Length: 406
Image (tube, rainbow, N blue to C red; front, side):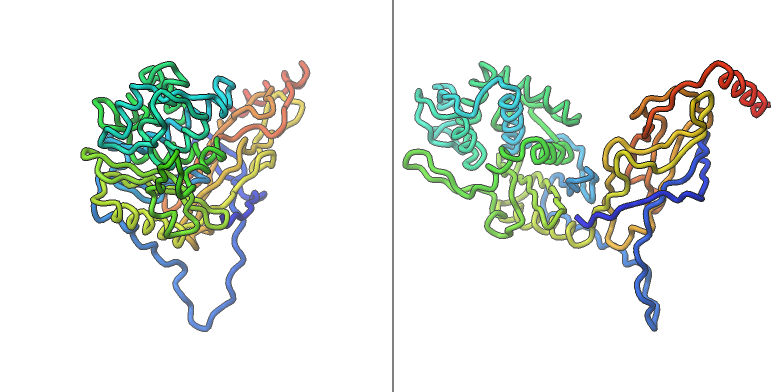
């Protein structure tokens, strides 16, 4: 990730709606040496290489969550075995919360074997029926071999039944922000009411990388053996590009060929989701084309850091006359390469602020636009507390507030 720091423009004053405060501006890049013949300032980013066959697709920047390109990104579709990423997320969360352990012995029940084992049309892990295996091993069988039997057995172990586990899946999905998704099973075989979207699945992939990197790492293992059965990971990109480290394939007759992929080059990570592809090869080709396009034409910048003032605003009835405003979390933005200096930040803060304010209290919003479109937005918070002043200072400020309102 080509991060650049950003600073405030101390002299500029901006009025946005009811706001009146200094404008935060990214630090301009060092200008290139003058050339004999002036070149165009920017070159238009070419369109993303849309998959040749798909129902929906999206390319998301991991650091910012911005959608760099996509089509039908919010259309509800069958996610097939990409569902198992949601299953992995829930299991990782339950392990972290102490509800289950990685070395738990998980039973391959008759139901799990019957509905997801070798006798079915779907992929299976090969763990023997009515025998146990370590939770971690069975989870690898699900992630690497896409074992439907392993997914059901894990769900039963974590929640008592697959139906109860699906309820957990929906609860965690809501926390991630997957507003258009609903799960009814742990494996992704076609079922009424079981659906997601390209956008929601990209959010899931982002959350998996961020929240549970150790579990996420199972997805880059190229093969896994259970007993005498050795099966390869179905993600062809793991063999094609060393920067790819996940995430999950999927296929049913209804869903078509699906792939959620992710790659990291340097500090920059991208996530691509292709749903409804025509073949295993085509979904891999199209996904890699999207990742290559994103890395070639986009870069991510760090605009503002927590704890540093990006603006200040007049405060009434406080022990100080101004409050410093900053961001609570690092503010990142992804832009087409070469467009960093075209970013236009603005702030929206109430015109009249009265103390007290606690450190971290939200006071306004900072927005960043490119070509008139908002591409990043974050809360503006008080960098430090501003205590309420004594009686006479409050009385004096009340007079001047009345005077200025007249």
